[in-house]
Image 1 (cartoon, rainbow, N blue to C red):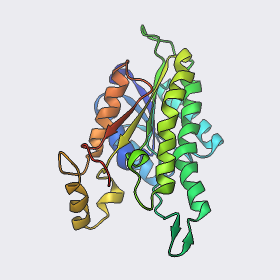
Image 2: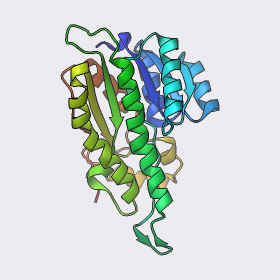
Image 3: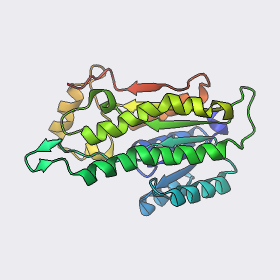
Image 4: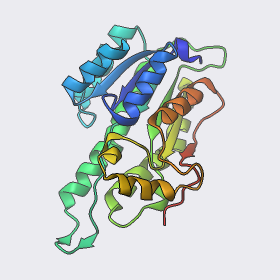
Length: 251
């Protein structure tokens, strides 16, 4: 698969890793449809980069089905799905205010894990109708895990569990979709300069960056986009999770 021949849907495409991936894909010649809940920001980014936008709630089956239909109508087909939509929840299992709120735990898993699976399964159903290339390939799905799946810290029970689920999905989903010629990969980012992190005080950002082994800086979201492009173009990558973290191992 070549990036210039790719027609990709990108969830969470209105900001952060999703936006950076959308911008990189468009620069490389791919067709892109952004899926995001933020209609104003999503439409603005889409217009800026020459992409299509579909307002989407990844946890809702009808919403995702409608977005995928809209994407296919706009691009003619779908050959890649990059799942970047997600939230971060911070709460200890037992904190000063009592046990971890159960609704917050459920919401984190619903968006990060169930939402990812929802988009992946419906995108796969669409990709299965593509004409296979000489390798038998019809599409690729890239899900976003996190180093928290392996090195979860205090207060990250919900987030780490949701991202651990993404890691666990990779191989069985790749095996399930092999017959259709659809590859499945996951990227586990470390500490990236997303809007959420950029909102922290500079001294906090500097402290976080100093913990990275090499290079000692926050990750650039464009680096995530570049890795996603490489995964699309490297047809032998399948069923694996790639850490993108500057060798950071959280304490």
